[in-house]
Length: 630
Image 1 (cartoon, helix red, strand yellow):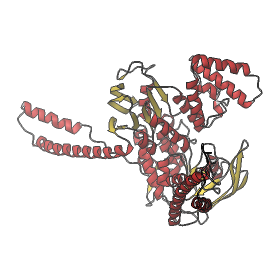
Image 2 (image 1 turned 90 degrees about the vertical axis):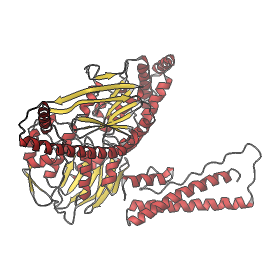
Image 3 (image 1 turned 120 degrees about the vertical axis):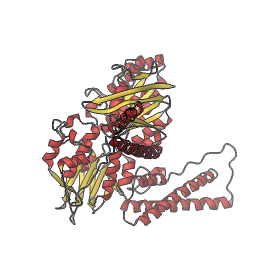
Image 4 (image 1 turned 120 degrees about the horizontal axis):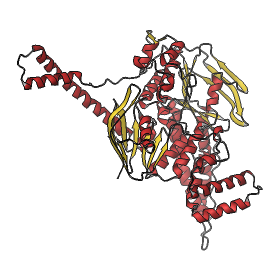
């Protein structure tokens, strides 16, 4: 069933054409990603689709009674609202009943002796009257899975990540025909992104989303729309299939362009001969030649270029010595020390609010640690790519802002590049240099932030959520640049694809002030988590694994069978084997925590950990069988 159809839709902003005469349809059950370079009109297209009720467009038709839900990049909220107010703002009787029920629960949770029994009884009676318990159970389950508690908190006091999680929860409370999401993974930690993947995979709801998260794209989508060269192209399949089809499309376009150029050569030669006859046939040929000459040819795909001269690092780069810092009685960093080595590329993982950005602010001296020392080498120059591009004056033009930072940059080959030429390399043509920064899209602003950072010629780069708002093309170029960057790189990111490509070891923030080191990529870390017993997964590289709790024997319903002599010996042996395996697993975990050893050592240790986990599971299962009769 067709839910939405677009026919010959065009849109411009000022003098810039975003897309023209695009057409597409969305069928029930499809999960579609909309991709394209920053500034091509992705968010604009979503806005046109989601504001039809207030701004009808003759080029867009929807199924009668279509229920559409929209999650924007920056969710709107009233700062004076509590979480409870924001989640249950609807006017329906069911929504109001659940709101009152949740309010009573929150009050009783905060103060068990609060005089609220009558209100609670009335709330339960209303829930019974409306048969709202199934819906309430769904709401409670989603809030629990997203770790949303303390519903009396004001929205204005929450982090960007928590606001995004609350907005996600609200989206999933209600049934909808078409769910439209703009960058849903921005500001989310990896645990929440994986939860969102699971939710969207099992939902039957039709989905249209803009996202740069390539693992997310690959796992969720069944179709991809790409805005390119002011047109919209459709690709069946996920992100991997899209790459293959896009390559084929590029080859076909190149062949078509070569064919047209061949025709042009023939036609130009004919025109230069100046045929005297002016028959209708010859006039048509002449018109055709002029049409070919004046046509809009295949646009050459511009590629973002990143390059700096590579300022030399000194012998001492950066030493963090026994850092500790707390905020509002929450321990963010506790006695953390680390010495950075040349060429290191380190990723930082951890839940929102665990202290990752706090560490960056301490390193760059924007924040003084409550204890400990930051010892920076004399030749170390930081380049800090923050989450929100705070340094911009939105009333500045692109060129004026960049020129104040420096007129030239020296590239790796020694050549100098002017600010204007550097901007062209970052896909800001000369015609756009007078554009006010406030009029740029979020992705264009982030790209400009990259230009400004590179103008300082840093040798130690700090990236705080660099993938937010950047398009996939820019991310690929940035990844290649970082892989070849000779200095140090420290990255906070929840983009698993980006982390796998760029970093070679990790710092894990646990949320309790402790920070551990893991030698490997995000996927290596994820596999290490899976290979460990469930009881150790929360802290795989910090602590000795907790002892495996042996399951209690289940009493048989009939007369108890006695173990044979052979089974009694096996039972004793299994207990010893379990202890031995647990000890070996603890030693291997400690090896990963220390981070000392060759790649071959870690590879061998990882394989052994998987083997031990399988053995433990088998032996514990057998122990359970024998324990029932011991």
